[in-house]
Image (tube, rainbow, N blue to C red; front, side, top):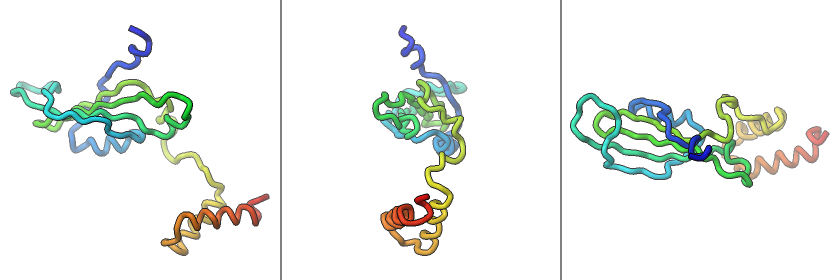
Length: 151
């Protein structure tokens, strides 16, 4: 077995109910459902139940932090959400590691605007909530070239 195959094994990541799944998914980095299989034989361990089905959704990482370098291979993290159609229990399986360590970057994203520019955008939106974003961008560019922002 190669080292990549060794690191690409599926591991049980989390167990929850189907009502908790939306909250759990919102805690993950950006992702998208690649494939859904329905009517599969349920493999979740239950207490003596007759055979029944489950739904499996395969999910891929779409985080811009993991996939920012266009020359590097994309993030290979995959999740599999196995949902029992009878009990609503969900087993979340994960394969691989994220390219970017999202745990170190909790909270606010890195600041891309100066506080002065950020406040100018807030002021423009408050003055005219219907103002198109392109107009706001032009106003910011004009201020950047013609005021103390250029210093």
